[in-house]
Length: 429
Image 1 (cartoon, helix red, strand yellow):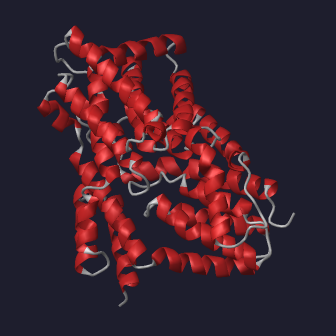
Image 2: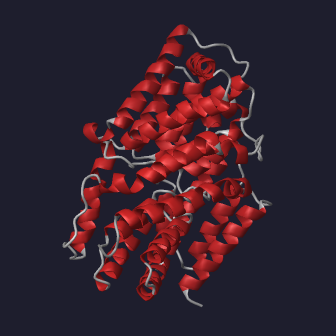
Image 3: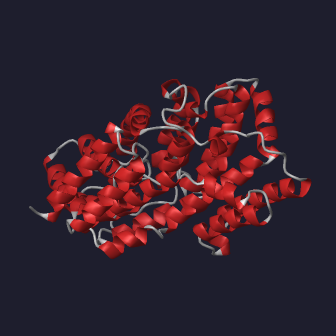
């Protein structure tokens, strides 16, 4: 039996365990990682490196930064002000927070960071409204994930250059991606997701957490109020951390370093005690993240992505309808990004899309952006992106509830993206 076959079997068993829900997800994740190692699908040294992965460190640090911010009275005061303006309507609350999150997602190219900034505010507003955060946190996560770099602002302004780099590398320079082309392609999807998350997503969310949520992560407790100095320190640390993340490219400091610095400052200035900081981290979700890296790494090392991609290119060449070709090049990367890192899937599939279009003498721009959009819209499983385990931890979701909430927005993304992009960027002008 080949390593690829073994890897796929382990992946299927892992997903089945997540859905079954009888074993803790963190345990399932680490168990699958061990199986990948002992079967030769993943090098032990590669697996060990995932415990020090920058994304993993970043999400642990953001748990602490968010807990420190949540410890201050600012969160409650801000939530109370938002709720007064919204007049107690969850829809109006969602309107404000969704638009802010979508704007932040244009300047901060990390859904974990944007979600970590917005989650404490949303949780406090839910507390003020007397509803469970489980009604609102996954819709917020969808916005933080699916709207990243949709507009030519901040990191989004470099998307066209990256796509042109793929065209040059694959020697298909008859076509050039313009600065606003990615925005033109993704704008209807952006609008559709925002409308869905504001007006409809809460209807499909559970009324209360499906799994237990740490009290420290969900609401203010009966601890004494912070001293004026510590209160101000909490504000300043959170604001400076947020500004540093927005300006990360300009100041040249890695995002994980900024997040860790913010977490350390929260303890150093007494906003959180050491015990509170440790308790703020959901370690099972952190282990789940490590396991998801291992699964993606195993799929990459065994060549699963390339096998699927080559089959996809061959299949696409047999299809005559450009919309069907576009659908295939969206749905396959979209599904793969639920178990592999989106950057890995993009690296594999965008060149394959270009070569497939080259063999058909077709315009590759629409297909390339479809692949990119699919890879930037992964939110259906805990392995999809680090923001999802963080959302599951704070909102109390299991995999079943996650998938249930994901099906409709995923269908909206697919239909809107394929129809619009293949119409605006036709393969045969």
